[in-house]
Amino acid sequence: MTKEDRYIRRRLRQARRQARAFYRCRTYPIDRHKIVFCNIEGTVGYGCNPKYICEELRRRNALRRARGEQPYDLVWLVDDTSLPFPDDVRVVSNTLAHRAYELSTAAVWVDNSRKQLEVRKRPGQFYVQTWHASLSPKPIGLQRGASFSKIAYLVSKHDADMTDLVLTNSRWMEDVVLHDGLLYDGAYVRTGAPRNDILVNDRTECRRRLRQNYGIPDGTQLLMYAPTFRSGSQGTVRSIEKNNKMPDFEAVCQALHDGLGGTWKILLRLHPQLTARHITGGVTSENVIDVSSEADMFETLAACDALLTDYSATMFDAAFMRVPVFLYAYDLQAYVAERGQLLWPNLEGIPFPVAQTEAELQGAIRTFDAAAYAKTLASFFQDVELKEDGHSSKRVADILEQKLTTWNSRNA
Image (tube, rainbow, N blue to C red; front, side, top):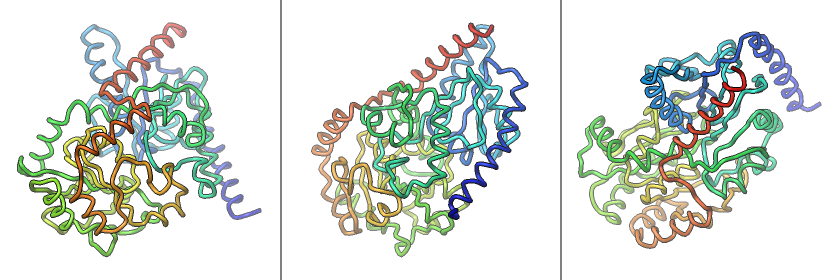
């Protein structure tokens, strides 16, 4: 028996023991108005797709109260309950006991990541998987080949078997991601990604609020630098110093001025997995603002005029705003060796300039052709049959309300 096999046996034994908490909670009735949300296994707070679905349901709760109807009990499982949440969202510590009770007694679950191995769903409950990326170059699940571990397969399959509905935003996601990526062959609906609604609807307010909070002059343009998560970075103190493979931000600002015009500042957004481990950006430049602690990346992204990333799905989110997107893939081959072949091999066919060196990055920014970029984006989005029109959250809330109405009528 290999070391990995022994580890898996321990994890499965642990899951079976912890699952007892879920079976004990089946003595409690299912609350016909309870919806439980979670974001990246509870490691981060109020954000991503679950947040924007919750926001729409909060608006509908206000109408329900005005009509004298019982509002939905909106529950959020999170590790750190000190994080900011709306007052009318019931924040619950993501311990095993609390998780077992809240999930076991909810009519609906909404999540953007995998449920833990011990989680058990009751008959009649409805689980919506939003996932935390839609269009993305990163392989997941079986697409990772040998880098997809046995325990990751078991966790993914366990979650997929409980899922009742997956949200998509394109034919590409349906054809490429669902089966091999999410290990899922069930029902799906093309609603668009709820987290992208703000990128379509609320950019003006997001720009005003962020500039006010950080004292940024109105005439200054903003580029977000949002590198993706690398498993090797978990214990590494990341800084913006050039020798830590962050780009030379002063040179990037100058290239932006030369190529796109105006004055620029850079918003540094480290991956939430790093922020959750209290890893900071180590900002030392007056032209760089570390926004990693902002609760909602998409409110910040909505305020930006351009994006710089590497392999993050955020590249497509930003492109929905039709702003310039640049890819700094300085470790492309190493990343592929660790993660698996990208879904667009070597990033070819992606509608963004790709640079592997700082000189290439600065050159791509200086020679950016806005008109050609707009045509390339339009063609790409047509090819993948994209659906992102700012109404995703409403579509999902309609689905949930219909399910709850049907559930309540059947179980009244």
